[in-house]
Image (cartoon, rainbow, N blue to C red; front, side, top):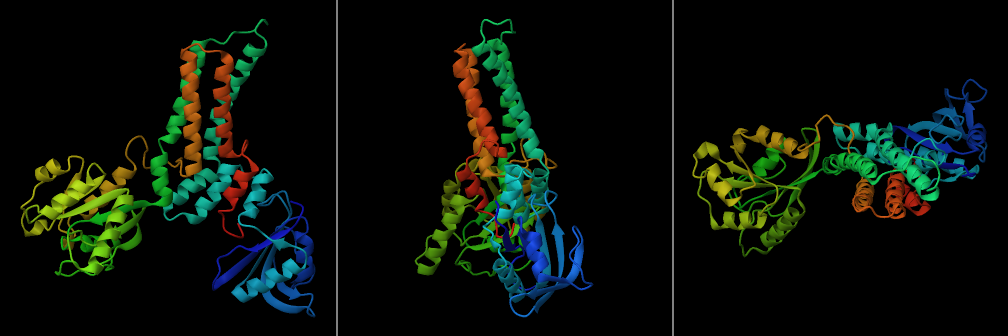
Length: 457
């Protein structure tokens, strides 16, 4: 990391301000070459200084009016000397300033390289570094809150706490294995089992948040299905609180899937309004129905809309059969027109469903739908105000592998297997948990993680 890197840190396009970031040993020297403070002198450390960026290779031609900040390491984002230049948010200005910085000896930063340097220099551990990207991509206040909690080290503290207990156990095992004849306290299989069960419980508690965490990070995929003209598009518009899908009395109006991202009770939701599923000879409608079936197959939650003012039809029965035991909300829509269907009939057809009576065009039942989605996401042991959630798939997989290793060790302790064999599984769990915070991770994995970051971060 001896070289100096530079990149544009703000999104491309027009904006009030654009920021170029430089990090490395020669950051301050480069700034002093190209920056002229309006009041004369140089840019003072940890001060915003007003001035101009000038092209030293073209008769000191002014490129832009800027504010510059120089932050000497190690008290900076990367623990290196860092410069941030705030210019006008024109892509021309940003490109010209970056080109000048590169001409002065810096090289273009790779994706996520600033955060990678922060990790390698010890300012952040790996889970905190990953939280930076989660923070940037957060779609709701809750997702942002969870990412901020991880950035502040809450997940790291939990994982390091578990690793500390495992390390204490490994030390005891090592002493008993290597010095069996010495006058030391002998570790018993019963105590090993108790300690391992407590460690297992701690890992399970973290894993129990993974399902909710994934939804908070990635969003809940919700597919609205049903036969034509039962109110699917009306429901889409009601949840969006705007007219997005065309609503008519003509069956088959929706010919294609319509996708929108919304926030329901602070939960990111990918909402898909599908074409009515039915038998048809219309080629275009058939294509829409095929797309509807694909959206249904990948959905986390299905909302099945029925016309509650009419009896069940063969089309309704076919859709219900296709749903099976999947999570589903069944809406008995058009309740304002009278009831031909009731909850008991639906429960006979779909025993695991949540049934809600609605009159979507009148706004009836919408709040209940939103409340049930909230309940579904936060059900079980995960409280809605819980901010320590497992949101990264890599973390979940490592926790599962560590749990499996501890479970194997528990079985061996109960079978009074040789301590050497137990030590292998316990050490494996220790190493796996170390990969979460970056203490035992390989260079290839580090490179892969940071390659997913955006430029300039």
